[in-house]
Image (cartoon, rainbow, N blue to C red; front, side):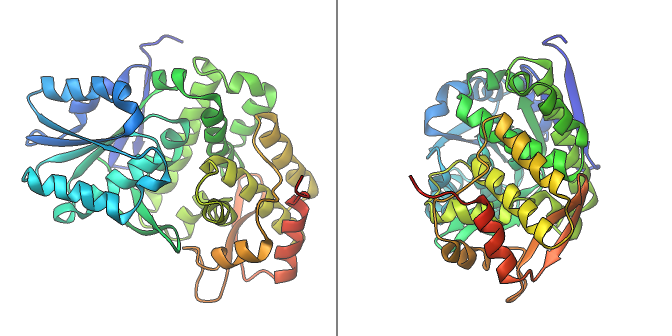
Length: 362
């Protein structure tokens, strides 16, 4: 495996995800020839990682305006988006100009939403800097911001012009963020690609080695899962909903905790909850439930939760995007690689599934 190896994963006919070490310098290759100006959106602490991208854009003759935003879910607000719209307006951005997002999932969600809504849509290129953003947030064209009522309740579908997954940036990613990102990778294994689970189970520590071949293969496989689903379903009918496995409770956990918990950690908890719920509904064997706990725990992800009351989490889940009226809907499994929809589960089953993942507070 050489550092020059590049993998290109097409998302249907819409765009490509480029995976490799050092690929962020290809950013200009993904922009249309008519671009004059670029708004480069990045988190406040990532000036160093964003600098080579800015330099590449400038060397190509483009005018670059950098916008630093908060480094957490706090960035995904109407106020921050309005500030970026103001910057676009002040510099007279037209439909032929572009937005480039350098950062994690909060930044790609925010920048994508701003690009989708400015002049009803300008092109955007994502350069994700976390594992989670590479395999999930940056791929798929879902953009959004949060409100006090919930996560990603305001958003738009806006396909990027391309995505650059530069694996070299993972070398400096804090271990806690790398571990959290593996939750979305494991999710892809449970819903579609069992080989992902086998790779993690064979050597969990190798799966966490930033410069190793296993993590690279995991990234490529997870991106392919998402790309295949998105290409077949651009606007979130049932097929695309399977990508939300573990997210119904996961998003509720994030909200009640004020977004202080990492997204991947919340999704890991949500997957174990969904597995317990499916077992109680009679669709998932006990050994697959146990496999959820063992795979997630092997890489250091949480499999239990006692940070909030079930009643508070249930109230948030009722506002989930997949809900229809008073009907709660969950993505659950019949087996590995066989996701199904569970509609209107009994509240007793919901409570029992939550009890199964709860631990007494210390």
